[in-house]
Amino acid sequence: MSQQVSINKDNIVDFIQGLFERRGDDWYMGEPVTMAQHMLQSAYFAEKAGADDELVVSALLHDIGHYTSEFPEDCLQNGVDNDHENAGADFLAPYFSARVIDPIRMHVATKRYLCATNPSYYKVLSDASKQSLEVQGGPMDEAEVAEFEQEPNYKDAVRVRHWDEAGKDPELNVPSLDHYVPKIRQLVEQHSRESS
Ligand SMILES: [Fe+2]
Image (cartoon, protein in one colour):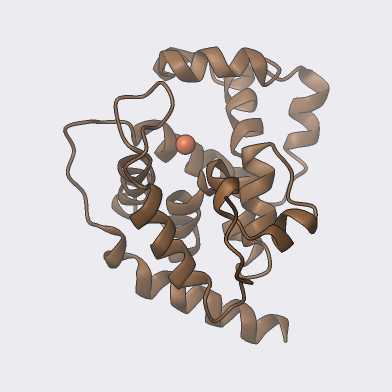
């Protein structure tokens, strides 16, 4: 059931926190971790790799599009679609920079890209991820690879995708969402200043 509140730059961070509280314990489809574990571990690996805040938050929020049932109806009416990568990117786009949003929007395409260009990558995919690859169109062909490499933030998308893949360890304890909230707030404020 969609919430009947409107999201804006002043409540988006609270909304994200609420989402983690309400739905974080959902199992991540086909993986041995919950959604919160998966997203927090992805952010943890980004931070560990020395990524800047935009990429850490991108990794943290990359799968938020799995929660479209939690998005307010006005967001859905505004064209948020059913593919989880586009749903998440469209939902967050008013509040974050392109470096946060592009790796989210591209994270499924990036898997297809890496399977085409990096032979060892396919081997590290989980079984669930290998299965969904087929539904998502399989590895990119040459023309798709060339087009993908025209995207300005495609290298960042590749980095986020590797952290996404790493964030599926049921034994790994990582910082909670609270650790990232100041970064998220700061990015929302920065984007609001720059886009006004
Ligand atoms: Fe993911």
